[in-house]
Image 1 (cartoon, chains in turn cyan, orange):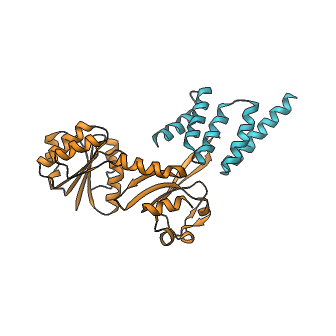
Image 2: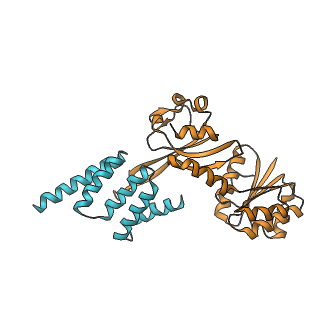
Image 3: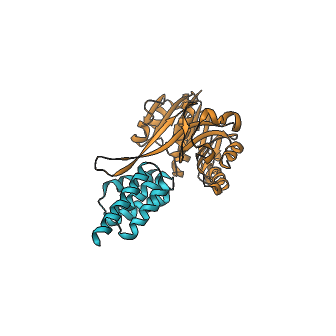
Length: 88
Length: 227
């Protein structure tokens, strides 16, 4: 049972990242949020940040990067993105 | 005509860039070397100095300049002192940026030929335009023309600038296109890279979520956001 869940979860992340890299940001956000319901993860929050940034929703992007950093304070990529957005 | 911009904050640096783009000789001055270095290859000269230093200011040859723009951010005392020094040195025209009405009044009294309150003017305009959520930034170039940063309207998506013909239809010129592109970094983690297309050409295409920096009359800029 657990194994199936893990596969589903990985599948969701893969789908969401595919959407993200293809600039289908809205779809990516939907799927990442589904994955979040299963398990909170700093990488999901971070990628949600990227998706919101793609949509130019900067406040939401910052919020997501901050959430990611709450879970993993030394996460370089999130620190970098957040720095850049604060500078803007 | 030669200009000098003292203080390279947001307002000062945008002003200096606009003047350089118009082909004027521009001298820039700031205390912060990183801000000055940004202009080292564009400006006539880029000086790292404290403009409140009477002696340094004289030695910079600033009295030869036709118009000096004082935009030293929030430092009210510094902007007043610099304005006074410039007028004492005989600078023909001093344009000073004020942060509020009182500051503006003092600047006029110490000799500023023109005082601008950009924060106030921009804030009013932004407030008016903001309901559309498409305006990110507005900079007044002169009373007639402004430069605005807007998100591309839906009707522009996947069309080239030539097809859109914005100059004819809206009287607007797209100065640059900003676009964010996601990619996977060496750790397999998505990142964002900003692509900037300066002076886009007719064949350049507007994509979804692009940000456009456009120059035009205020009413035309407002028209475009309603698109």
